[in-house]
Image (cartoon, rainbow, N blue to C red):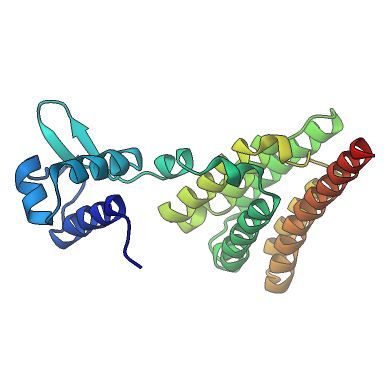
Length: 233
């Protein structure tokens, strides 16, 4: 099945950037020259450039032309369809991916942990416990814990992905379960497993952490469904 013309134009422009190994900040040819080289009309090129600019792939500078942008996940997050934010299944899938990343890296990062790292993480968990004792949620503290947990990897992509997931969760804030004692305990369990060098327990604790979130979301979904049924009767 043939792609719609605007999608074909976008793909050709992406391929041009890759084939010519253009790096962020590199300029693209003038519109007419670029359209001829891509084998598309100027109108199709304009539509493609607008779409790719929205996605953060290229940048139009008035009076100067088109340039390759420095990639940022921010543009991806901003362009996520609204339906993602309201789909329970989509949220479950997002949790599954995040769990796979954190569960897959927890043992590797544990080998790089110093006592200073663990002490700082202990302090963050103490903040969670204090917030819970005050009856407050601690989503932002939880965010700091997970970003700090994987900081010893010194892997910018991992940090970016974790931040991306949290940006998405921020958009879904109304659906997020409030922090509870179980969440505090499971974070302590993760640190205890790292201190003990117990790889299985590390992965088990990560699974339990995400399992708790999943159970809370399922409970909310079930409660909302029952309320809707009650309203319909």
